[in-house]
Length: 150
View 1 (tube, one colour):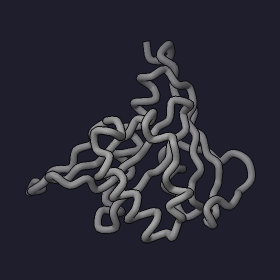
View 2 (cartoon, helix red, strand yellow; view 1 turned 30 degrees about the horizontal axis):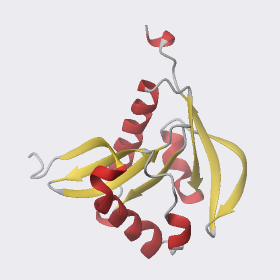
View 3 (cartoon, one colour; view 1 turned 180 degrees about the vertical axis):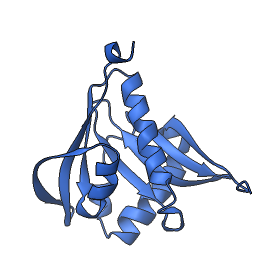
View 4 (cartoon, one colour; view 1 turned 60 degrees about the vertical axis):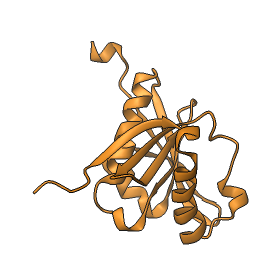
């Protein structure tokens, strides 16, 4: 039976869904993980590309891609985790990076999420480190070039 509210992934700018993006990030990063708002809110949102997951009229997950290839702020509301939402968001951001001629994307993964990113093709870079009081690991994904897809 089809879902009553099928999930859709939309690529957008921060300004278009600012309040919804901020609400998801507040729930996940500030309320749940205890990250300081001073660390969570940076000056990189306005220039970033976002992939947002929408069910019905509700934004239930988000991810951000910077022009330099940095992927981040992947956040899924608790009731939607382990339902492929994060996978679909990251896959859509990978596609956006390829479309913008990037050859590599990178991220700082929370240690608990290493398997998630490894399954998507990311590999570890460097040594683990602590950011915002949480253990992280640098990761990157080499992207196919357009010449390889011709």
